[in-house]
Image (cartoon, rainbow over all chains, first blue to last red; front, top):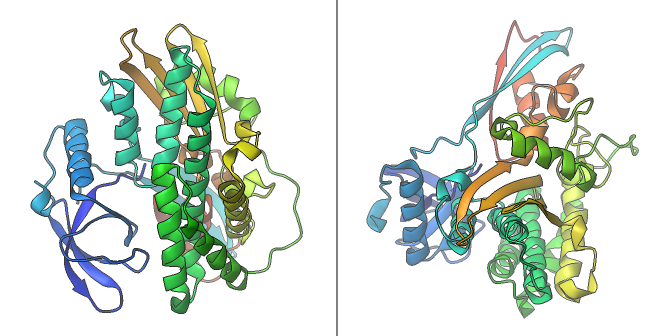
Length: 80
Length: 327
């Protein structure tokens, strides 16, 4: 099971890298496989790579579903 | 990190004279979240499983859609089925290409990025746009990244549609089957390599199979799903009894089972899911058997982790020596 927890892009770094906020934790990932990533975008992350961008509404719906499933709110940047 | 722990596989091994002589596989993977969406209308539950699964979300959504339809004795129309076929084919392209790109030179990334973008769009919408031509361009680069394969071995024990009845009967009678599935006298493997007659334990087989399968999937997008009648090779579904049904989907990672119970008012009452990983990493499954006698090339822990990744790139694997590793 690879959960799709949306992560907020907080900073773009050189060499197609970016800082994200995922469940309240800051980390650095590669955005080399996704076009036109910008600060404020939400991305789905898997093994250190952004898989895709998701729009804010979809990010919010996904976070709500995950909240519902585990019963504890997730904390992901401005989506909460 | 997220309060949802995706779980881990732990591999403990002993090494003697450079050969793995003993290995055990432990799993601490949580079950699917699908059952947490019980009580929702089916359409909402389908959207939910599609959204919360980062990888193979289309396969999960398709499996629940068809399982629930079978449970409710509802026929899915040709147009809707063809849209799912397009979405599944596009998802397979995106997932396979994303795995293959780790072999690629950085210079190829912009081309692959365009191809991934086109495939993901088709996976999301079920609509094929002109931009899928970029996928063929990316595929043209991949052969240069792949290592040569050895001669074709004898076919491994593959999990196929012929196993569906036994799997679903076991899943229906025992919810715990989902966490440690087995078939008596069998050690079935699932995934791209075995779909083409290889075991993932053969070096390079998984990546070679990914390219072949992705090119076939592109053919579906180019020619239209309606021209490929054999949808059963991708998805099978059936009713088991009143208000219960199942679907099995050949997801990018392997055969995915959904067993669904639907209420009379169209809400999901229960869902049980068997993911491909649970077959491949069963304590007596294909990965465990591939480890017996495995001769690691280089660092043992790294070599075993790489072997595990050929069976599933999704799962976190801890590799722990039982005794001194002499590699």
